[in-house]
Image (cartoon, rainbow, N blue to C red; front, side):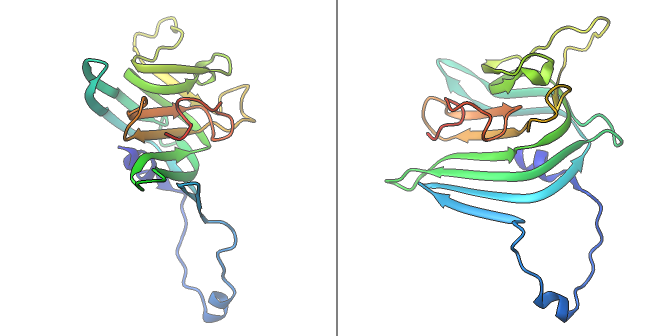
Length: 214
């Protein structure tokens, strides 16, 4: 699901053209198309690419296991729509992959996949959501709402019978702020499982249980 969300997106149209030998000699990778950094047992890779997508899926579920004595899903979404139409799609600017390792055993502790900047709407019935989201996405103020296997709701719209919620990335009033989306897989610890962080970038999210290293 994680790779489908970000990699099934259609890149903006471009045509491949072979380079002449003289052009190849002048081509370098200094513009930062790919950036890889290894720092304090954390590997981070950034891909400077732009993607546009309109995608729908009937259901998405992830993280089914026992937690606090209850077996349930970390994420259980239905009637998911990424973008509203082919003419009103979701734009994704840049992809980030991060992996945290145990400094003693070198075991993988956490994987993060996402983007710091999205523009467009993500609509779904979030029957179960684990992680945090920015309430500005649903028309509220700029603050974090933490949930653990709980539904996401937004203010009811008169005459709207559909129990869905729309995350409006780069919504009115916050267009100058980056709004990202990240899927986090924790292998162990108090936040073990699959969490989603929506509506924050890597800098604007207050350090805490969802973003600090394991």
